[in-house]
Image (cartoon, rainbow, N blue to C red; front, top):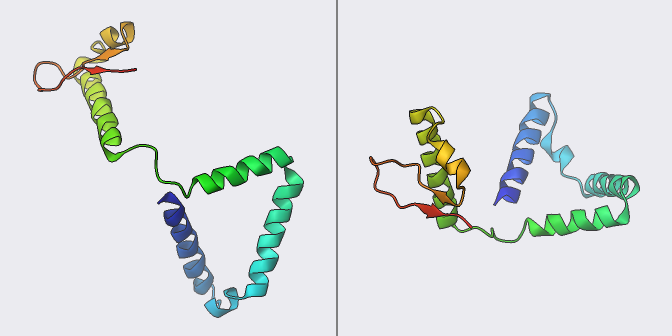
Length: 122
């Protein structure tokens, strides 16, 4: 998802910027220029880095195409914990977090006003 958004941002910023300066978009869409630019970029990466770094870079780029390891529920749970932590810190001027820092595996910062369970962290 972030790969598609990143590519959209790149193309969405290059094309309007190029046309604002009077450039014709058809000039940008040429196969020979893509080969030259991509070849120069790949050559610069190969000469500037060790083979192990280049291999790790390609593995990371391919990893961008995989789905996320975290589910929507896990992300929502993390946001809820962060919200409760920051809310308690704002409400009690960080004094509520003292108990949490002494026993970080059991976090319950919601107080008596909210109906939430304590979260046991691994």
